[in-house]
Image (cartoon, rainbow, N blue to C red; front, top):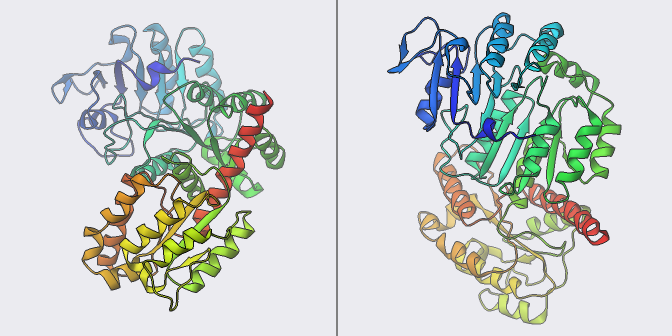
Length: 471
């Protein structure tokens, strides 16, 4: 399905447009103005002759023919007349932000909408959703998000709240988004249509999705099978329990099928299932990093024996390994540290030297030249860096980021923080996090998150390689 004019509309009409940002609806007209949408905007509201100096139209019937996208914030009882008018005016896409459909048992209205839409070229997004976010066209649904240029991650979400949260978290973690859609009740354009479209987009490197129900499981699995041949597809399923399924039904009218059967089919076709939102974002960070893990052999460096022991246990339990370091590697590491309370074995315990960025970068370089290591995991403690380095921490971050540019192996930092009530320490953490992300590194708050993400990505990539080789 060609969805180009949905994500890159040349013009947009907003039914229910208002000059004010208030009430129980998203102010799409004002948002598109502020975000910087460059196409033509047509506010539709019989209460106004103009909005912000732009001519307002009484109804869709008064619009020029061939509008790419109509966003509807009018009450559900007006939706049938709106779709009829959209078909007459040859509108390509109508996005119903409006709720009041199958999520409250109003299936008949949805059926009538599709009957009317099928009489022309008009396709329906939703209803009961917040629609499209596309940095490349400056279309969006959140005033707080200002992404300067398109990234390489796509997301399709059945829930407007989950989709909005995804965009905000991705933005704060400097994950570049290319296209996002909240699709709600999916009475027309369905999850598999968005998945297929994203799969065929060469600018998209990874696809993620939040799903409550699938209208056509066979079509979805076929789209998934095609998509995973070239890029990871990460899926978070809502409604996996009976109670969750009931919540989904009242949320988007979703009718959840047997989760175990569905999950098995997704895994069989190399889809990556995650259990929660955090796992999804963590996995995306590593999957779109500048340097991707190619194997399970990790080299860990940090300060403190207990942390090293904990890492070793978690890594082994997740199927990773900590190979013995070569003699040359250990000799290089020992050049910058003393022999008391340190260890040059893997995991590397730098003791108090682990709070020194110069020693950390030197050790990372040493691990980089070791042929037995696939991934380097440096452990940074914000608490101790703040204590021992004080104001120097942010000024000396370039020592690490400069080293990263010349290291060939993927680096997966763990940036831990245990003190939770110190504003100044939190500023240091945010500064380090931002610097590492700008350097193209995935950054994790806990060892568990880092280990899980590496293992999960390697699980997908190994299956992908086997399939490609068999073909």
